[in-house]
Each structure stands twice: as C-alpha cells, then as structure tokens.
Image (spheres, rainbow, N blue to C red):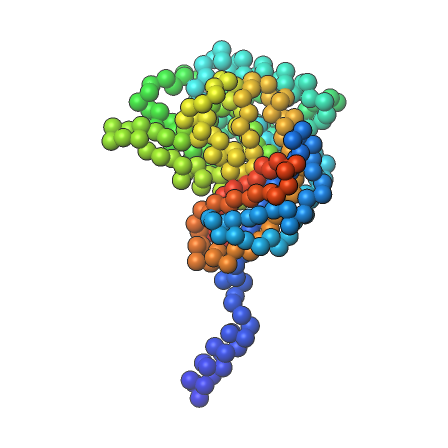
Length: 317
C-alpha cells in the first residue's frame, strides 16, 4: 500500500509538470534601434531579427517597444581613484558645467569611486533623485562636500595596478547590486579610464575577458545600461578594449569625451529607441548559472542595433 501511494504521488507530480524553480526562464534583452542618422526606428518586427544564443539560433517569443514613463534615471559614477586634488576639482567643475547646460530636467543619482576603490553614495538610489538641468537643482554644493570626504593621495605605483583593477571590479559589482534595488531601466555613466581586458604578471599576460563578461551580465540583471565616459581621448589600448566589453555587453556605449552633457544626451536618445526582446532558450536548464553570449542581427539595411550581449542563466547573481 505504501509503494502504491508513492507511485500515485510521483504520477501526480509528473502530470503537474516541473516545479516553477525547474522551468526554463525566458531571456529578456533590451535593444536600442536607430537608423543611420541616430533617429529611433518604430516599426521593427521580430521577423527582421536573428538571435543566436552561444551560436544556437533562437525563436523570438516577444518583441515590444519599451514605453518610457517620464525620463529614466541617470546614475553618474565619478572615478576619483587616480586623480590628485587639482584633477578632482577639474572633474567636479566639468560635471557641474555639463549638468548646467542640460536642455531638460533630468533625475540624477551620483556616486563616487574613492581613492580606495570604494563606492560612496553622494545622491544614492535609495533616496530622492536630484532634478538637474533647466529649472532643476544645483548639485554643485552637494558634490563639493562629498569630494572633501574622499580626498586623499594619488595612487601611482605601477606595482599595485593589478590590485587596483581587482578593487575597481569589486566596486562595480557593489554598484550593480546597489542599482538592482531600484526597479525599472537605469543608465549608468562611469567617468573613468575604465577597466583593462588584459593584465601583465611575471608569469605572462592574463585575459580578463571572462570577468568583464560576468560584470556586464550583472548590470544586465540589474536592468542597467553601462556607459563608460573616457575623458582621456585615447583611441585604443587595453583599458579602452576592456571598457568596451562591459559597456557594449549591456547595450551601453563607450564615449570619448570630457563633456558629460554628450554622454547624457546619448543616453537620453537611447532611452527613446528601446525595444524589449524575449525568447526561451531550451538549453538554459543545463547551463544554469553560466554566462551566455547572445548575437542579435537585423536583416534590414536601414537599421543600427545596440544590444545586450551577455546574461546569466536561471541564477541569482
């Protein structure tokens, strides 16, 4: 009788199907879709797109324009790690000037990556955003006060570069967790030289690409597009390539400029050209917790895509 009861229970479970925790979860990605002049494309169809998940073709189950409710919040992360006192003042001045020239009122949150590679919330997402721009608030006094709290000596010893990169990486992981607490789509602008994709050790060069892809997947899980604004105007190098892995992996961009207004304008424009794409990968259960790469292409010649390209399957980050 006991064996019969166990068989009936097992049969009942099979009839009900897999438990919610065992079901394959759909993958949802954000696409920025524009024409070659940067104007939003509003008539994109699922049949226009091709999706490959680690080279395996996928069937799109849903493609919908992202409806922007007001202006998405913008999060600014100021990297002060390698800046001396004078350079910090110049950066703060440039930020204030750029925000003052904004053509519309924009909700802003501000963080500082201090000299110890720790994240310091000036205007954290747990509070109320500063409304800057025309008719908005002046963030200058708050920013100046915060900079006084994170002042310190500049780190220039090349022997600690590998430690610095590791600390910056962990700080950005902390930032992704912080942003995951705020619902909805966010845009993060990191004013920094960025992260390298390679590091040289006595035993040779180490490829950091897997770590950078995992970092991009974290920001995607936090529904955050990552923009790296590099004010050094460098056109190449391992730092630029590493930053591109994270920014492009999240549907963000790498911007070479010292004008924060340029980065803000690009982020605002991207927010108006978004689509949400969804598909259900049949291999997600078998690859639980792994970083997956996605390639999205479009058959239409008049369309340019900026897309998220990495995610973590069925796993909490």
